[in-house]
Image (cartoon, rainbow, N blue to C red; front, side):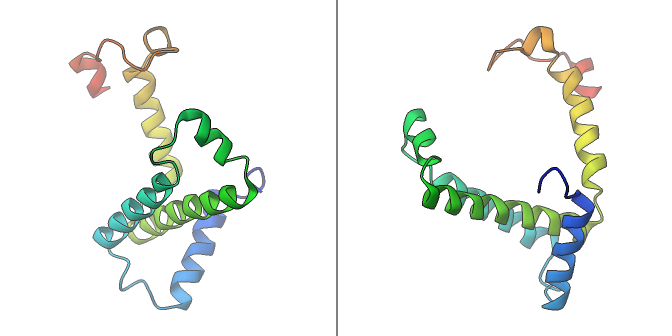
Length: 126
């Protein structure tokens, strides 16, 4: 479905779900930001204390993979709800951030590295 669903369609589905339950009054930026953090923590909890190998194995188990998918869905649902409630255009925000990151993390400095020389102040502002 990732290849056929658009962000706009998913935002609309989340909007319909929230609106039908009259939840918009609870969907403030603060509450939604907290919900994103909470659901992210629940996603991380599946991997806490596991090695890289154990984490990979966890995703091979259908039951564990489904539970992890549910947590990831919760993170994205709250993210889409945050975008709906604040009027943030996610496609524009992602494109803008990727463009900034092209400057901040140029391929020739960052490829295959976790750490590299920090960007200059000019690179940060770009």
